[in-house]
Length: 319
Ligand code: DON
Image (cartoon, rainbow, N blue to C red; front, top):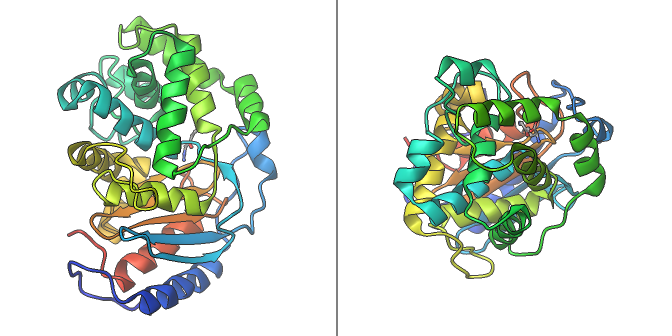
């Protein structure tokens, strides 16, 4: 495919080489025009299909970027990985495993059938069912406190206070009947014990948080750095929690295409339907892309191509 390949080593190439390879990966992915912008949430349909940003942030804080890395968009499903980390931090490995699960459903991110096929179990925190269960489990006195814990935690991952895109939040609130149904179904199976409408509301808010590719690369670099934000220096979660989060991202971060992603890229990743995609090279760097056109599974096309290029060129594949 003409993509340079570096054997994986314990470290990244020198900074100047990383900067050049980010530019090469960007130019390589820019040629691809496949995919379409999500429109099932009406406010997302107006995204610029040509927007494209690529950011790599090293665990020592080094930054390598190209394109629209300061253009903001809603984090969407990428929030799932970071809220799961907050949950693991709060309730521990065993409870997160028992209640939310870690196995790939093999079905679409918003599948109802997956729940029914698995005795009402939400399967994993990367699909909507597991993400709703995750949000519901975050220990809090009420929905307002639950939102505040999630908002504060995601902001600590990003190293700045994130804000909600109110237009996206309203748009999704008016149309997310399917998530309401999933939350009701999980409630019927006793998998959600909070008010399901409140859980959907907090989940919708967390999905509507505005980020840019730079923010997402900082968030990913925090997981790469064993839970310490390399920009602020603050510990956000323990190293064990960062490891557990990467495991579920590897298994299900790109939904039913997670196996193919792992085979081609070899990194834990997480996509969002607004066009964001984060990947984590443990001990090395966080990678983030923003490019709204998606494939059929809901994953950014250019984001996947640019990340696959970088994984090979920078020797990041963990296998
Ligand atoms: O719940 C939803 O449908 C959206 N808030 C998030 C879905 C999403 O990002 C799927 N990803 N690629």
